Length: 117
Image 1: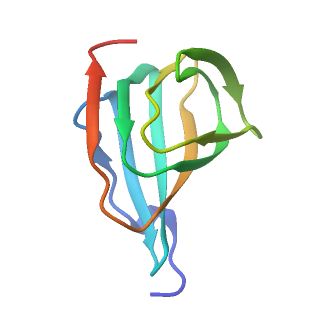
Image 2 (image 1 turned 60 degrees about the vertical axis):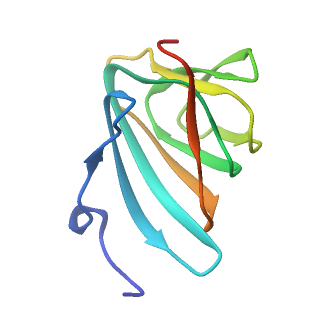
């Protein structure tokens, strides 16, 4: 389907995350677009992926770590995470933290590096 609304795409819980869901908004021939929503206090543990991530923050604030360097991000920020680099997320605001994440449309192996942030 070339056009759809995000409300028509079911959200699934992120298995390794806390209070975090994912929607796969589209899966094209070359990339996939996903929307993540982290509730206040939610996050994802330190992990690696075998594909790079290009992200755009839609709403809220979070602390993230990319290869051991910490950043605080907010709506309007863009984030690049190279493949294989450890990274984690923690919502530090009072509202949902939401972002779009685009990845190459190929197999992605996710490995949790350690529990917690």
